[in-house]
Length: 139
Image 1: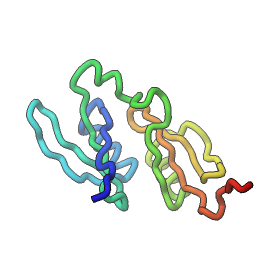
Image 2: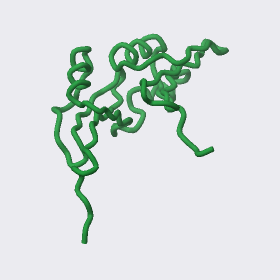
Image 3: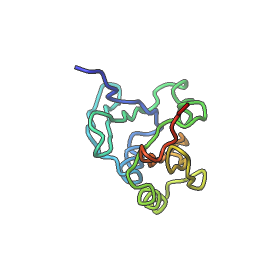
C-alpha cells in the first residue's frame, strides 16, 4: 500500500469552538468525535472530496501546547486549501466572516489569497492554474 498523510493536528483552544469554525465557516464535515480519557476527544474534520486527509482538532493540554495555538508554523502559511472555483469559495468564506489578510491575486501557479483560521493560523485559498497555463522551464 502506498503511503499517505492521513491526519494533521491543529492545536486549538477549545474543541467546540474549533469544531464550529471548521464546520460552519470553512464547510468541513465532522468525521469522528470520540471521547477519550482525561477530557480529551478524537475530533476529526475533513472537506468532502478530500478522501483520506483530515484535521485532528486537539485541545491544548499544557502551557507549551497553548503557545502553539494560532502559530503552528511560526507565522508562515500553515495549510494550502485547493479549490476548483476560487471566487465561489472566496465569496462564501467572506460572507461567513472568514478574515482574509490580503486581496486575491493572480500568480503563475494560480489565484490565491491568504486567510486566517479561528486562532490566526494562516492558510492559502488557492485555485491552481491549469497545467497548460503554468510557465515551463525550457532551454
